[in-house]
Image (cartoon, rainbow, N blue to C red; front, side):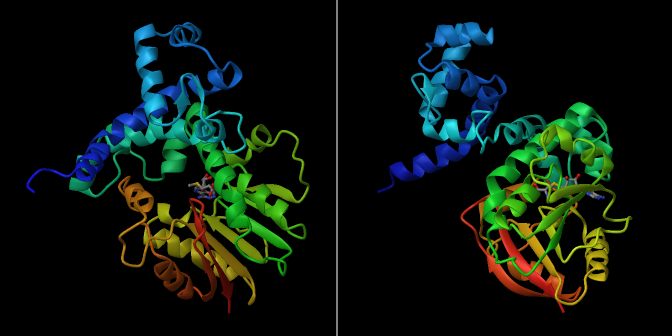
Length: 335
Ligand code: SAM
């Protein structure tokens, strides 16, 4: 009974090989393998190689690895790949995967330094210091900005409906999505709540791209306002939305932002917070705890910790919802 157990070996191998699986997924996605096989299912490895202008040997290895990971059947997309990896699927994570490959991967290759220092590794990975990652890093180049926005857009399209439908919001007429990026989440709120108008508030560099993501602007209840939520007046609204914002910032800045929201809120106004909520004992979920390793200046919290934080600014938590999607949500009311 000293022999290693099969399940244990499987689990430990899975963990050791996790990075190879991630990189295989990122690479196939970057090379548009899933797009090619969506439009032309049934190609063999040599044909795929020719289309990609890649080596036959390398292409075959990549395709076989994708089969073993459940992403392809020899060779067409599985239902999972069609849903999440084909770049034209409504739930495509292609944009987020490109961000993981080009930004998160280099950061995590310096994880050891991140642990020694307790800080993010932007300087080591990308050769420049960034105090404010958005303004100093992502939005300096049009290419990096678009890649980041595509990443947020793709996640928001997958999570948006679950967050938007988490609560009865029929008592609210106007919402403001602070740091609402491309507006993907705002469009989901407007769709789920026919009586609600939603203003997306984000930095000018982001707001100027809104036509790129919504060329037809098909919902007149969604509008965009440019500004800095630490410095500028916030648009008036009776519901403020903060989705995936607070975990990025150090406590001082979190308090500045929450104080501004509290000041803009009359009693009865709502604050809808959406984040990954850590288990109260902090044993999971691992996607939250792994994200924390990127060492942004902020931190991941449980729903109780978020409730206490919001309470210190005069909000009581009315409902907490653990969705089956990637983001959880809580609705708080200003007293
Ligand atoms: N809320 C979106 C979502 O859940 O998909 C995007 C979250 S993204 C992690 C953070 C957003 O906050 C980005 O769109 C960024 O441009 C915006 N942001 C960062 N600093 C800001 C500031 N000072 N004022 C306004 N928006 C800001």
